[in-house]
Length: 191
Image 1 (tube, rainbow, N blue to C red):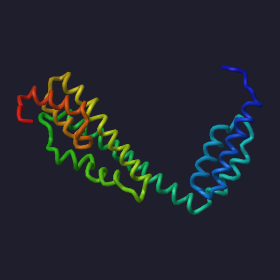
Image 2: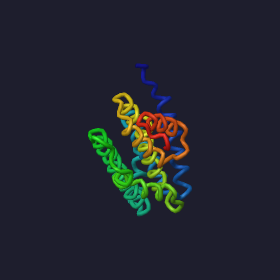
Image 3: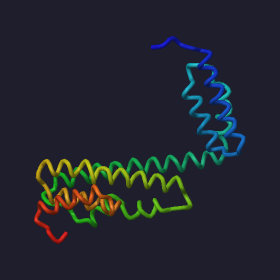
């Protein structure tokens, strides 16, 4: 709602462009392309972005930038697939009369592969994507799904989803406590 302050916009653009050029000077073409892309998109329509656009056009032809973009697109596609698998699995558990086996959960949510990928040291991008996917599963299975099952008094289902969460973070106090509560409600004293 404030009046447009063109000198301030231009100075901000100049400082961001300088940062992009600094990154470019280090020789990290994928990082430079990413930053020039951000500068162009953030300032397009506000000031002349032709300098950023021109350098980005050159960088996008660099094979390193293309390889990085292809790898990031593959990771994004896998992330979407994993998100859909989580939604589908959660819906199936919710509709099931009794919880499926833990092995089915591990398979459908690809937990074992995700844990291996999260531990990778040779590809930090893939490891980070796997950790993000595991956190998404953990959050859903330790917080959202159990709340619904406790509200519906479906304690076996609550214990099941919390067991999945504990496959990801075995020592998480919140998940341990709520799993114990669910198991107590089912009468499973040994566990």
